[in-house]
Amino acid sequence: MTSTLFDHAKRVAGSYLQPLLEAAALRGVSAQALEQAAHLPTGTLEPLPESLSADDYVRLLDIAAALANDPHFGLHVGQCVKLGTYTVYGLILLSCRDFGQVFEQTMRYEQLAHDLGRSNISIDDDIASYTWHSNYGSGHRHLVDSVFSGIRVFSNWLAGITLPANELRLMHDGGPPELRDEYARVLGETPVFNAEANVASFAAALLSWPVPNADVSLYPVLQQHAEQLLQQRAATQPSITQQVHAAIVAKLSHGQVRLASIADDLKLSPRTLQRKLSEAGATFQQVLDQARFALAKDYLRRPELSLIDIAFLLGYQEQSAFNHAFKEWAGVNPGAYRDKSSS
Image (cartoon, rainbow, N blue to C red; front, top):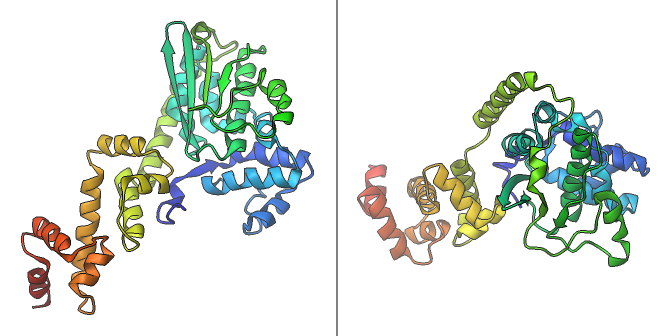
């Protein structure tokens, strides 16, 4: 479970929530029913909120699928996507000159619509591969299905035609085999399931296709606005080091802290977490040491805690390991630091 210290950092825009509510309503499931089943406060979903916790959004996908008795609810959510679903990011896509620029802007600005995952595109010879890295793992089938179904609907709308079906590989199991015809109907063909990544592959020539009726003159204005929104997000969200610090503090007293377990709390892969920390000029060990040092100084001011107690609370199995680490941080051993602090 993600620590409440940084839950607010993962959101979906209210406009991105709208297709979920619309798909549920079409199947007889009201916003009030979803609130009740998800144990959300009355009025959380209606009127439409400015934003919603990403964790709650993912839960609502599964809850709505169960209430609607719809094994392909995610696909049907994607079919309800409209231009306004993606906020200002959607308008930017409408002002792109071609699909290559569309994908470039998606990678830059999709976070304005949601914090559910991130996009990447690579080209190998004449094949382009679009990969969507979910922040929620392969167990959330409806989430991945909604993303790829929505992309197909929006791409067809941008192109003004039904685009050729992509070769699609998805990490989840596809649900009941006897019900997979719906994938071919919605996505153009049945994906390969239980794949290593969520990837749509297509002819790289598609990237040069123009976006019909694109108003490219609006692009600079919309991009400037989007950049301002990104800066506002960065100013109000905790940095990756702050998020890791908070997660470490929440787990330390329960035992040793590992990078893999913190990455899991932050819904990142260990490799992605290492990369993000590196980009921020830090390592996991540095953040761990900083968290331990800050807590240790606080604990040492509490006379009711013995050095053994403090070592345990900081995730050390031996007091000697704590003593050695603290002396490296403070230049004196913890006992001397405590004596000096109390004098």
